[in-house]
Length: 255
Image (cartoon, rainbow, N blue to C red):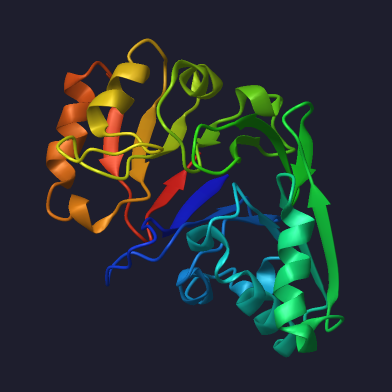
């Protein structure tokens, strides 16, 4: 399984970071997790392309995670693709219906399926096995953990965890324990007073007692520019002893 970071940025655009978006692939399957502004252009630069993504999994419904959802639908229609599935937490159907209510000329152009999932049981999305847990953010949403169907591991023990937008807390750390890679919201440096997102120190403290191979700091606001090394060091100093990297658009991680 390979993770490609398409968008490591936030709701405040910067030139080198698109909004939230991550591509999972294993050669036979592909899954797009979140679809913020700029993600479609990043996706077009991959071997998969928007033609190869027929399932989008949403962590939550904030604009910087869904802004390119209808542009993706339109691009697939214009490319001759016939299907798109949108999977996400409760309210995803209302979100998609509302978008199509504004852009009604897109309604019916392709076979569109919308599926709402919960944290009560694992599910499949884009050919990957997935489990979810609730986040702590200003909007209800999910973090996800993934395993490919070829793996013997259940998704709860899968190699990849992705937090979505959330504060750092013990339940999230337990959810990611044992993952080869955790992509976690770390939106601001320590000297920014913020809620609904973690700072490096709060994230490092929360992960001090879990085993995670590589931690990727993502959802980075402009405040983090030029301070990425400082932030990774703060995570380590707070107690996390795995590898820490700041995510960057185009970064690929093999799992």
